[in-house]
View 1: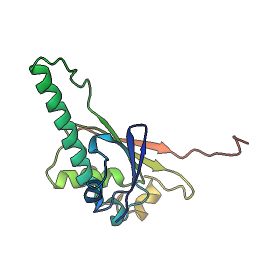
View 2: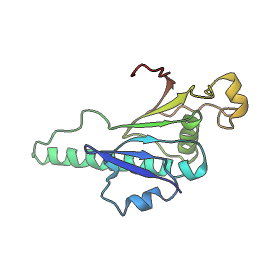
View 3: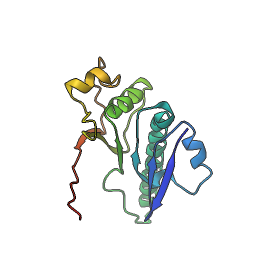
Length: 167
C-alpha cells in the first residue's frame, strides 16, 4: 500500500493513503492534527483504502484538541477555544467525493469536528471529469446516488493550461 508524507513548515501533506498508512504513521513523529492536505493520484484500492479511516483519525485528534482547549478554559487557564473547525483539503480525481461520502455513510460515521473540502480535479490531458461522457466510463460516477454529508464540501478545480507563460 502507498503513502508518501511531506512535512513543510509545521504542516503535513500526504500523497495517496493506502491501507497501512495509519500503522506506518505511528512509527513517525507526524501527528494527525498536522495533516492539512491529502492528494490522491488515482482511485485504485492501494491508494485510497486507508483514506476514510485516516480522516476519522484526524477528526478524533481535532476533537481531542477542542476538548482539551475547553477543559483548560474551564480551569481558568485562559487558553483560547478554537474559533473554527480545522480544515482538511483532499485533492483527487473525479469520484473521490462519492467514494468518501459513501464510505462514511455506510460505516455510520459522521464528520462533526472537521471542515473538509474534497477538491475533484477535472479536465487535464484526457479532458475527463464529471461530465456525461465520463459518467459512462467511471464506476464512481455512474448509477450511484449522490450522498451529501454535513461537514464535507465538494469543489471542482478545472485544469489550467500552462503555455510558455513562464519562459
